[in-house]
Amino acid sequence: MARSSTGFVTALTAGALAAVGFLAYQASANAPAGLGAAKPGASPSASSSHAPAAKKDAAALPARSGGGERVVYALGADRVWLVGADGKARRTYEVMPGTVDPAPGQYAVSSRTGSVPGTDGVLVEHVVRFTNAGGVTIGFSAAVDGSTPSPDPQKRTGGIREARADGAAMWEFATHGRKVVVVP
Image 1 (cartoon, one colour):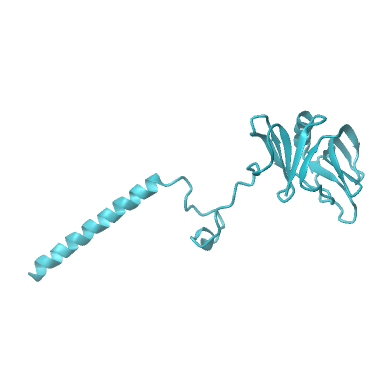
Image 2: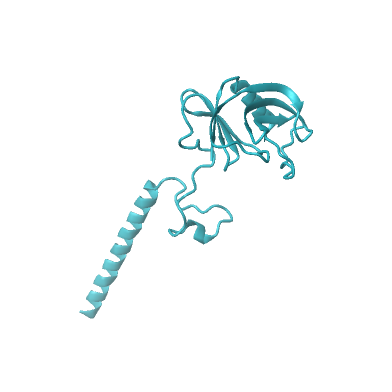
């Protein structure tokens, strides 16, 4: 009897393992792509259940950024979105802000200039201005030499630097009076 109960337990265990394997296969086949995949160089704890919720897509249009055609500028992300009438971003890109930030709120493009020396002495093009803060004019621009260096913290500058291609896209999109929404 000991032999038959050992065989029975072995068969039962094998059946249970097969069932668990089948269920695990089913679960993995129906899981969203990338679920549980660790990023290269990530520590094992980064994907544990105790980690904070998954980070939001950095390029996703911020919630509560208004409606209609507009430029959205996120201060915390140093990112701009050019948003069409359908509410979808046509383009998004990172920028290098000046040392003076505009307050969050809604503005309109107030002036534009093809090219001019920036407050840091660098020749800039596609200048799109939308407000003033503490006596400093705030606007988007692209350095003609393509640079986007960090601004001198000792100078009060309001130029929000873009790559040249992004500056050209802003120039085409942000005509006089276009809404500019600044979010935190």
